[in-house]
Figure (cartoon, helix red, strand yellow):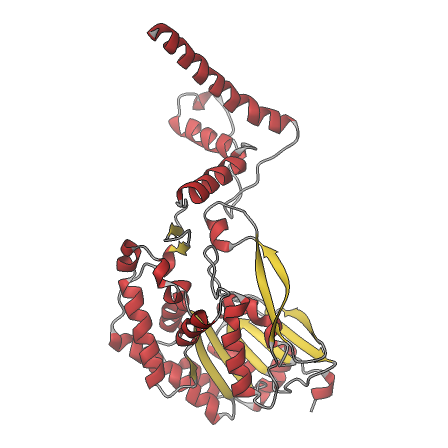
Length: 399
């Protein structure tokens, strides 16, 4: 009996070995090729020569190339990731962690050192100095932090994750307090989103995506309209056709499933159209994005709006364009004191938005000194002409 069991075991593993060889070989022969999941070129087989026959590094490089070039590799990674998530509630990958009730969390939002209050206060003071400089230049402005979803759905953290993120929680509360005490024009999105979550049935964040939903972004839209264009009518909120996309946390976990995401607009009457153009500029950073919009119904604000932003604003572009007809988006990657001063010279409104998980690093990178306030105060008339090359006025607005 033991002999039969042993023979069956040998046959099973021999068949498994053949399948592991023949299935990828058959896929390759059929013209199928592996796609890289990481954002880098796949490894290539090393060049062979007889001198490398006894070189362990050669076989290591060859093994890595064969694994990465395997046409079944992507399928295996996705199958393993989906099995772990949907069957066992676990996730793979170094960037993500499984929370409660099927929620996935970005590890970056859980980890971090506690920031001394004196250091954070100095950075907030320099940010407030920028706000004062903008006001002195006759500009309206707003600063806001888009919350990490863990701040709004902290009940989806495991006890271990809640303990691990204690410094993140303390940093968040400290930053919110300092911003409120600074005298800046500041929008507390943490409180607004917690309140919205309690009031509506629709989610303001979802389990497998880092960004707020379009329902979540409406708290920001309502605030900037009431602050910068109070003469405009918001109108009721209505759902439009959902958007199908691959959630970013699922992708980071190796799962490329798709989900429908609710999309919402303010029904202002008539129809607003958005036109978007990328605006190249000297390095560093990403191109600016210039959005203009028209309306055949409700009026639009004529104020030129400059928005310093990150990926959270992508969920709100169309909603912003329902109210403001001329908006320039500059990503944090493109920010320098001189560049900000140039664009501010031709703006009426400046909105500074950062996601919570990047806020502390951005404060440290950009606001250890008052360089931005100094650049605004040193602005000259020539800057507006330079700004026109990046941010041309619509023909009807030309002076």
